[in-house]
Image (cartoon, rainbow, N blue to C red; front, side, top):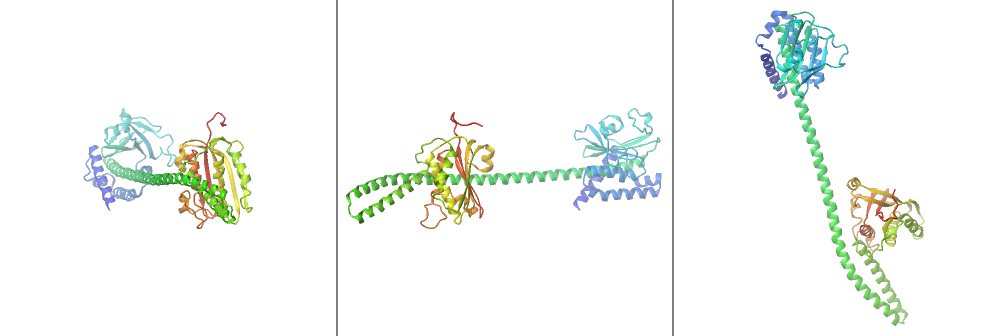
Length: 480
């Protein structure tokens, strides 16, 4: 109801404004039509305008509106032809958008639409002055621009809304004096209704645009919020690992000093003890001390405080060598598929530590495939861009890397546990099986080497680890 009332108000205001601009009064319009054309024509006009008032509510676009007015309104009111022009946004030019009669031989298509500058010709003058006009004899009007089919009389009415010209309705006739007050009243009313509908269409477009802008803003805000949460989560994890690393590094150093004393004294006691039982006890104590030393080394790797002997290394050759001797310690049910690239860039890395990291991943893969499976290992050059870092969340600086990929076909890692796999002392194995430092030491080693490690996993389909080693920038590095 609000929409219909608004349209009615727009039509009334527009009719009054345009009529006053044309120097006409609307009082007694229907009696004027009846007096000049008879009551039958008056009834026809009212039916057409009433149908227009109803149909205009459902017209979806300005283009449909212009063609409807030209063919279904003006075209049914005894006008020989009709041309409708739309004003451009700069209010400098009229562009033909619809037509009826002999000037419209192509149905609803306009070939080479007319363009009339404001102020040029009768139509341009009407748009500029915003006043409706009737020309009884075009041969006597100096502004008349002859068409391919010259006419003798013309009626031209502007479509104006809120002090803005939105278009012009123009009709010509081959006979002089063909138009009078009746035709003017009819076209003024049609122009006012058309102007009001155009305003409603523009408002609908503005509302839709505002809605689309709000949707876009909401999507951007949601994305920014999610990105901020993800960044805060990664920052929290980084700070947590940093804190744990500092604690683990400090404990490992102190504990390593204690182990040095313990191991040294055990060696002295072994030389003094001759009884078999005593030697066995000392051997067990020495084995426990060695295990503790290995644990300390893992803690130092995780805390990125272990000593690394980094040098230019061919990662593909290193991986091939490591895979050869690791076959002897892995289950025979695991099928190897090694694809080491022939020409990877040299990397600066501690070769022994890199082999240990790879071994950790291979052992994890074996644990994930207790009944056997496929294990794919590959190396490849990788250029990491800022876009890659942002889209994939890589903790790297842009540049050249060599990627070592280890993929198994095991049981996979649940999504809710994927972010925990690099936490120190976290393990899915049973009590007493593993210390939970394998993957954390891999991450610590990669960080200390200037790279990183990522993990992707799908439950019951397998897990993929990718280790990114920074390429060497020495003169020996291969550039491609």
